[in-house]
Length: 297
Image 1 (cartoon, rainbow, N blue to C red):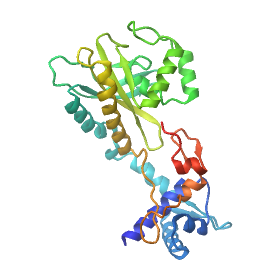
Image 2: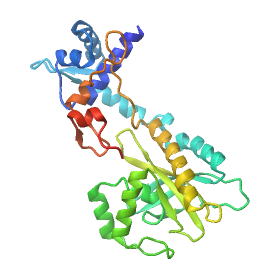
Image 3: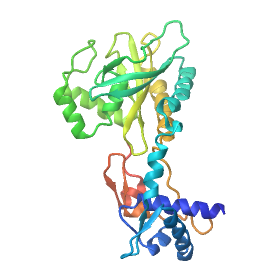
Image 4: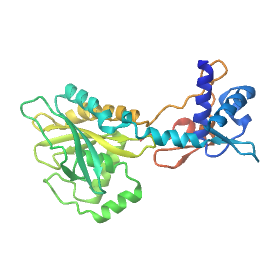
């Protein structure tokens, strides 16, 4: 029974990950499952609406029920971002002793703070929930900017004046673009007293199930307690871990399995990997790039 359930999900995930309809033999060969078993499981999936068969080509694709279930699940409170993130903020604050925040994009040019776990320290940084701030001079804002598409970033820079908030604010496009590239490479952004003197902050992006940045988690505190080296060695990696957990709860990077007749991974690339799967930026990964997992962000 368990093996049949596993194989059914393997088929569903493969159909959803393939770029076009696939044949029975391709499904069986890609997953290492006998054609008789594949056919039997697909008949049930077609009947329930989770798979669809073209009557002319006899090839299979995902059925309309997949979209229905996906759409209905997005309204479930289990996926509410605030509910998902708050325990992670508390854990981050307990570990670092600093204030942690949940931040969302606001419009196209700002961020807004929507949740917080306050530092137990006598001297701490407190940002009012509902407070808005620019993207370019905050850690959370830069974490979000680093996940903009090239066109989004160009449009943002064209309409935004990079006004200095402190003498450390990045006020040229070249400096900001260079910082965003560093942010992508290390996985977190840094506000080195760029928004407010005496305050340092680290933030990492929250990605949803299709790889779109929907917010950020940040940790901040006074620069007397948070040196730049502490951000690089402790706070940055720490906030990245919590943001990754939050992203995973929203479906980002969900594993796609493949089982053979014995119920284990057969060592072959999944059919979705062979035909091409979508990366977070919407581009198509195919061939060796798909099997290697593509370039890391």
